[in-house]
Image (cartoon, rainbow, N blue to C red; front, side):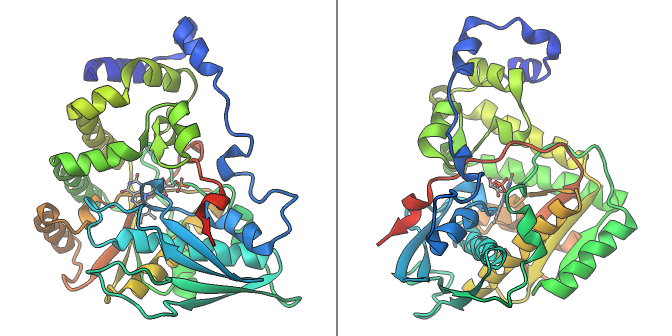
Length: 388
Ligand SMILES: Cc1cc2nc3c(=O)[nH]c(=O)nc-3n(C[C@H](O)[C@H](O)[C@H](O)COP(=O)(O)O)c2cc1C
């Protein structure tokens, strides 16, 4: 990929409407009729388990890898397990983010159940919890859906189909003191782990340096970079085929710009041969997005057991739904939190810069602001998760 070409094409204005035939051909590709999961459960679906699972798959999850297996265990019961074929061993070597992504799934499921008149009774690690040095074929949770007339729908139910991670630039929107207080109160009342929010020019500069450097460290290694490339969807055909991962539309490119980049700039073949330009763009985008962000948040925990990770996921999901309800944009940036050895010195520097006790684990770090919505990332069919 030629970087100058990339930047030029990304910067195209509306005047680029003189379409080439290649773009027109690409434009004709069809999208999935189920909207890649984002219509919610099919109206003909009568099984409550399948209904709640149709919402659960819409949760935030690392790289949109969708690391879930569901085993049906009874009329209204099922187990949730990590899918061992959907891990990120290079960037998430201890599978911490994969377990956070189990928690986001459980939270979305519980909220959906409440909206459908059921209580989701969640029993964590019913066959025993395993450590951070292993991934064992045991359920993360057993779930029972209990119908109840007394259940109050969670107000966040209304936002399950609109929540998303917004990777755009945020135009230096700073959360107002009232917005920050609203989020803090929400976290104190409804989350298990502390939320820290900061909005200052001094912190912004620190984040710009650290998060850009973190992305540079991440892409310095071929294995790490190629793990991301494997989940990058280069065109609509890949989206249709895999229904996971993320592409240029999730970064905020739409319409003609998106088509131009997909048709003329990015290709899997070229990028897999030589990822230099792709990697450089990742660093440039990290720097640009952070430099347009005024407010940052993080969730940290004293412990870092598998259960901590799952409950953090539940918290993070609730916060993302709450910011959606408040009309705010939210975007995790996880590179500096990752556990591979190359990142550890910068991680220590990050903790020191923000006065975070080195014994604590920063589980989620994210930008907050305002930006136009981006298209949703695709989801697989629920039936693909369910194993009997
Ligand atoms: C544990 C975790 C870590 C994440 N880390 C990043 C990240 O470093 N960079 C990023 O752009 N998005 C990150 N995300 C957001 C995911 O990419 C996003 O949730 C996924 O692509 C699905 O998209 P959606 O949230 O818009 O539905 C993370 C999400 C989770 C749950």
